[in-house]
Image (cartoon, rainbow, N blue to C red; front, top):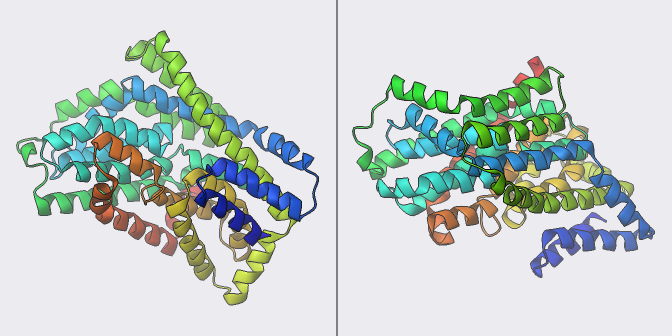
Length: 425
C-alpha cells in the first residue's frame, strides 16, 4: 500500500497537479484498493481539521503578516545592526540575526524571507554585496524561522503525531542558535575572502545605539518569551499562545508603532486566510492518509523492513534523513511533514528514537528542502526580492547549504543538543 500511495502521489505531482489535490487523489486510490466506502474520506477529513491545536497556525501566520506591515520587522533589523553590524560582513550578520528575532515571533520561513529580504537585500547590494549573495544569506537564514520557537512545522508535527508541542518548542532553542551561529561564521569567512561589504568600513559598535534600538523593539521581543514561558508554566496552550501573540502584535502595530491602520486589516486577514486554507486542507487530507496507512499497517511493515537490515538507531535515523533530504527536493515542507511524519515516527520509536528529537531533526531537514531546487519555495521568494535568476542564487547558496547540512549532522551525532532543555524542564 505504501508503494501504491507514493507512486500515485509522485506521479500526480509530476503531471503538474498541486500537492494538495495529488494527495487527495492518492487517498482515493488507497480507498479503492482497500475496498473502503468513499464516505470515509469526508468523515476523516472533517475530523482531521476539527482540531483545537490547529488554530495556532492561523494565529502565527497573522503575526507574520502584521510584522511585515507594522514596522516590527524594520525595528528588529535596527537592533540586529546595532549588535553585529560592525563585524566583517556586517549586513550579512544583521540579516541572520534579524531572522533569528523574526523567527522567534512568526515561526514562518517564507514570511521571514519576504520581510527581512525586502528590508536588507537592497542595502546589501548598495554596500557592494552581490545580489545573489545577499539573497543566499536571506534564504539560508530563513530556515532559522522554523527552528526557533514558536515554529509552525513544530505545531504541525506535534498535532499529527500527538507529540508535546511545548517540548518541541524548547527542543528547537539550541539548534536554532547553532544554525544562526554557523551561518554567521560562514558569512564572516566568505565576506572576508571576497571583500564583500567594503563600504561598511567605519561602522563601529555603540552601546548608546544598541540601547536606543532595544528600547524601540523590546515589546515585540517579549512575545516569544511570553509564548514559550506561558506554555511551560501551564498558563495557556500553544493555541492560546498564538492568539496572545496575534493580539499583541496587532496592538503594537496599531497603537505603539502606528504603522498599520484599520484599513490594512482586511488585506492582512485575507492573506492569512488564503495561506491557512491551504494548510488546513493539507492537514485534513494528511490525517486521512495517516489513518489509511495505519489501517493498512504500513508504518509497522516499514519498521520491520528497516530493522531487518539494522537495529542501530543511528543507522535507521540516517536512512530516514537521506529520504527526507531527497523528498525536500520535490516537495514543500508542509505536505512532506504531514505525509511522512505518521509513517516514519513509528519506525523511529521502534528503535528507541525520541519523538521530540526526531521532530526537530525532521523539521530542520525539510527546512533545508525549502532552499533546494526545484521546489524550494524560499528560493523563489528570495529570487523575487533580489530580482535575480534561480541559477544565480543556487550557485551563491552552496556554502550556506553545506553549513546547514553540517549542523544537521552535528545534531544527529549529538542528540542531547536537542533533548537537553526539554529534559531539564
